[in-house]
Length: 405
Image (cartoon, rainbow, N blue to C red; front, side, top):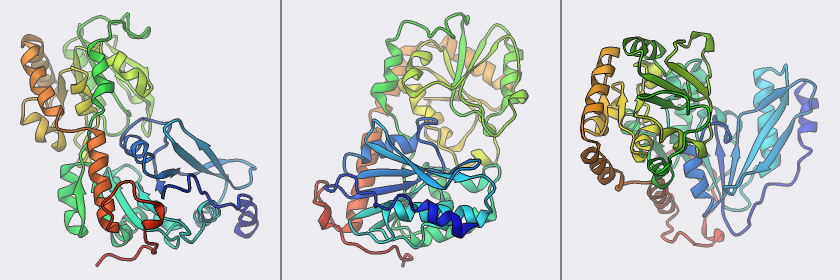
């Protein structure tokens, strides 16, 4: 099976070159670029100012097709490549086909400067023999604790730690868990695109599907999966049937039928990143009902500073990277039970908002995704011994990734 498909997969023979004036950054991601706008999109859209950014996603399987790479551009200056594979392949053939498609797209040897940027260690299974100048592991989540994680993922992550020149973590708790596994681990918690979310402070018109919902409103946005405590949502809604719970986001990895259905819970589905400020503008309180389980042990929710930038007070369950620093600084209220949620909400509704918002703005002024990317890029340039951000591509040395000292 593999021999036949390999020949078909080589239909695209010209290595991806992009803009020859920039080095190539190839990102291997378990998240779709067009799914939910989060950490990879924030960082890689900024990386596109310095690199030709190619994001290689996980494969899509369809019946009766020949293996090929679907390549398309995005407005952020990023190119997306999706391996399109026929259904029914063995695990070994899926790995082999991805390797062949990627090698055909970018070439085995690094003929011009390039960086490999991994979000998923699983991609190492089909890229370990490809050359690059620098290998980076942006460890945004503890994937081994997510539903369906395999031993293979753990083994490949260990190999990736051995190959990486730099390791970034998506939060402080994850940094503390990983800092002894590599010689150069750096914490970069979730940051904020303040100008985008602060639009919510001035928007005056509700979206059509929210306009009919009474006040007060407690709102959530994000992926709705095993990390959400859906029972907590239902219990809080039962305690205050006159409060409205507005839940925005795609439902994945859990059965939608398990979501609590109440007259005061409104499941509005997924919304685009550009639409979020308009929805947030109509929320009284932001609600982050994360379950306290293995999948949330090390998360650093990007929505925490996004709620705050929107000027929306927040209640969250005691996620470590929310308690530190947001809870400790009085920026976010922490609640473990439904009764806690009600008490914290009543506190928020009764307090003056102005003093809290001034404290929020002072804190948020310290960081941004622009600053996060700039700090990451400096570390990358330090690895190559380059101090200037606009050095020519030819200044980067070429070497295959090797185990860390």
